[in-house]
Amino acid sequence: MRHNVKENLKKVLEKLPAGVKLVAVSKYHPAEDIEEAYAEGQRLFGESHEQEIRRKAGVLPKDIEWHFIGHLQTNKVKYIAPYISMIDAVDSFKLLKEIDKQAKKNGRVIKVLLELHIAEEETKYGFSLEACREMLAAGEWRELENVAICGLMMMASNVDDAETIKREMLLAADFFDEIKAGYFSSDDRFCERSWGMSHDYAIAVECRSTMVRVGTTIFGSRTY
Ligand SMILES: *Cc1c(COP(=O)(O)O)cnc(C)c1O
View 1 (cartoon, rainbow, N blue to C red):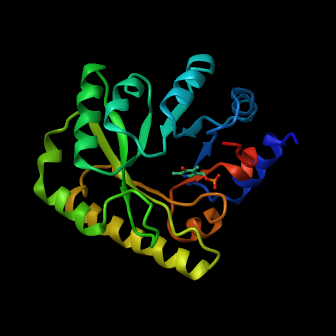
View 2 (cartoon, rainbow, N blue to C red; view 1 turned 120 degrees about the horizontal axis):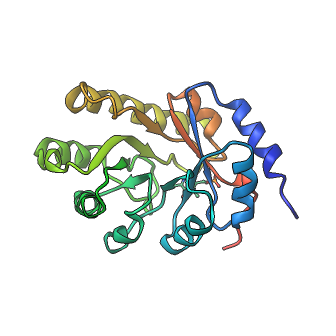
């Protein structure tokens, strides 16, 4: 069935308060679907596979801001470094360092978010709060001049229970305040709290999200 990308996109945008950005998650969907959203003014798109994003970026308008939202292997950074706008899920210092290195080679500064692991699920990537504190306290990241740490990202547990989702998102929001005060109080670039997907973005905007990542609700279900 064809999805009405235009209508779906409008419905999502209507539910977002001013100041909350939408990353339209287009992974596994064809470039034509992205064009449809683009025609409506959407410019931020999220993808999670290096080859897929490269293929799409090659044929789609150059003013699209591509977000790499999935788990990124260190050896893939070099391929996306020339054009990626933001890498949303940095989950190790090693990856951060590699992004800096490749950004430097391309004469760019790449925006990144640090991914937190807060959900109960074992399979999720990301820094534990303690590991994130340790990484920042160690201070080596300060030498990385070609990455801009723009905030935090997390995925709440994939459950129906709104209270659990809320608790996890608010924990992330509190943690954002701690990190902002401790390390980035004079850095305006550190301002994003990226949580909220198709099933929980309405909750996320109540929990201080500034950037939701919505796929299925806009583009329909994915066939992998
Ligand atoms: C796929 C994906 C999304 C979008 O999920 P939907 O449920 O389709 O909205 C958001 N964030 C990340 C990190 C993803 O991998």
